[in-house]
Image 1 (cartoon, rainbow, N blue to C red):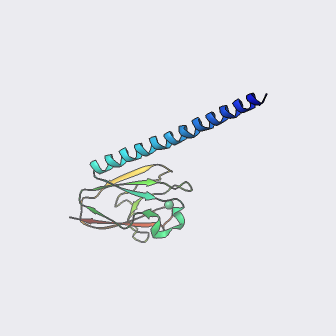
Image 2 (cartoon, helix red, strand yellow):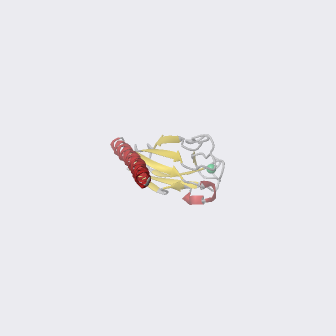
Image 3 (cartoon, protein in one colour):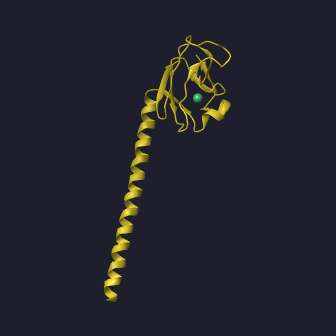
Length: 142
Ligand SMILES: [Cu+2]
């Protein structure tokens, strides 16, 4: 009887060990994928900006990094990483009233991305048309 209990314990331990190493290897696989995506981004000269969690309350910290420095011809990819609300990436600032004049992502749900290539030197402001306190800035140099 004692032997059976001990065997049971050994089985449970073995099972627990298997489960632990399974989840560790899953995490490691994800990290490798992340690195590969990073390498691809460098190769295609893409710059990433995140619309962060809770962005609608964060003012000029809604888009990160911001301000961001890039070169003429560079492309920025914005990703909405906020689980709370959709957002936009709209050229101008909330008081500039330049709707339709510049780039505009339209509504980005969580996980959606928007790309824009900057072909002119200068400072470009943008904001979220749903939450006009959300502002960001791109500095484009030659
Ligand atoms: Cu917004």
